[in-house]
Length: 315
Image (cartoon, rainbow, N blue to C red; front, side, top):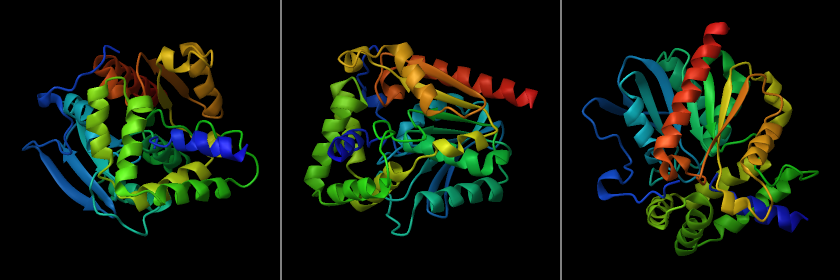
């Protein structure tokens, strides 16, 4: 049983359509590359800020990912938002910080909000970024307008039934990842992106190459923290609205007999306890739904932001 759970955890870890063929002009970049943006560090976080007016919106990418995860949405929404794009240490070629943990990074996120006087931001996180957004809402919800989580959940899917001490499972995964050579890590990322990450093979190759620039030891350490984490008992502490965006691709779940409504129901079950919860599906799409279905994903983001604004007016 433990071996099966570990295998499931590792297969989900990059959590860390018309098919998208990323044209050269659309290739995700690590920076907004605009004269209106500034870059700075807050603790171990690298921050790219665009604009100084409009509703604040903080984007957090997932495991082994960079700000390129959110570049398209950041550019699209920057006309009426102040955008903060984060990159975590050790990811996407950023220097590793040996002492960085999820808790220390959440502390740096609080520093960013307080030192920059960011008033009630929405945090939008993909995968690990969504987990961080949920964690932050549990501890510091009074600082937020709300949370948008894209395929980021309070417990790693596939491990929710694990009983007893989750730390042994987490450390086994850490050791397995740390033992990889750079070539093996790159091959893992390529396989993940092809099978789980994206629908389009060309896009999968592009993003796999980017993810493989990440520091293996950092990925292993943070992955272990994700596996060990189970936020479900604390979800009732979240007092801000949460919108979960759930990618769905029917062929991937056909053998399991899960349709779109079934996946939405599963995500609702994992998030049970969040008082103000909405789950939106984007299909056909895999984990990186913003690349598989950019227009549908943009519509889901707009719906999520509208929902959070409406909920905020009622509070």
